[in-house]
Length: 606
Image (cartoon, rainbow, N blue to C red; front, side, top):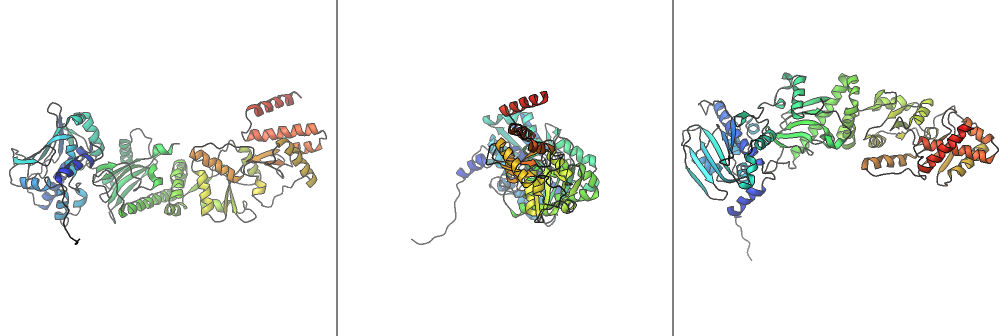
């Protein structure tokens, strides 16, 4: 068999139904596409007028939408550039031939911003009309001295072009709505679609004579001309029921890509997922989607606002993004812009920054955990707060505790609490020893602490009740055990009988006399498993094999226990002290709690 060459043939009878039914995922898109085409027609005429190629009166350029339930029609009318019969044949009858692209290519050297002004791209948007219409008419008159023309098609490959009566320039597209799409004849439904897609188009859009859109949205204006009030009012317009944002960033870049927009930092609530997907993506002021995960870094999905770029690569239906090098560039730019803004706020007014840290901190920690480049920038302004409510940058805190909180390997040990109320006893113990304790009670702080260990050289992060402090931090201390080795062994044996579990470590520690007589602590790895289980939504029970029991050899009650010769009294006192330790960790429940209460009552009677 010999090799041969040829050209692929396309059967238009088969491709037309595919375009009509499957090109767009949502039928409401037809209105976005037809209105966008009408806006393009007006923009083209405006550009030709500026070049002197059209010398007639522009008048008030606008797009009008009307609907008739009786006639079952929707009409989209513009007073833009219009078409001749030859142009209808060229732009409408040739599927995927883009008049918008042809216009841009022709005038790109004469009109500096031509690509950004013209919406159309693929030459397919008009055919979305057949998703809802059984018949489509075009009645149009060119801005040039040419007769008006009418085009009619009933959703197949056959069409009619004929002379028409139309005195004014421009185009009317008349959709004869199919039975299964009559919902679009409702004015409120049309308003809903226009509010979604046409809210910020650059040419006035009217529905039954009522203007729908703001033609110069805030993000297209010069930031120097805007006041805080303008930004806040725009935020209320976008999110009518939201609290005022903390602050905002006005994006404006023209190289190496075009991008404008406004990103707001909202006050964060407890449920992160509810906050997501609040950024609206536009292309040339046409709404595209609120799924911006590829353009905006994951940690900034919590922001609110608007991004608009003609350089964002869209699929053929302009409904979602396609992978492209520009997406990565835009992502990187937004990350840098946010980091620079946060650093600026921190440097200009640290007190105000600290006051907003509860919400800002979630963004910053989320970013440091998920984005290496952001971590490098955020080190300068990331804050930690101790239980005394004092803020530090990471480097400031490292220097603050370095002299006092190091172990035998010269690691700096960061102590923290995840619940200051529940862990108060341990915090108090740390303070008495001169140690500082951080508040790590946020939803990301468990992972944040682990990240600090990885990123910061010779740093250990330990929860204040994870292990006994005098064993964790091996600094020189004045605290010495008053018990001899034999006495320590005797105390351990008494408590082992009470604990009744060989798998639990029982030890005697040299704690301060005014600290608890018995402490129950968790190994750090167990504590982290607990925190991880909470985030992932599965239960982790603190069982009797996962903790340590430390007896304060310097406490008077432990010494009293040693002085008692009656074995029953020894065991009774040890049981009571062990119960108190369990109670402090919330481990007493059911019969164990009931028995403890009973013993306490009997003790008070005595």
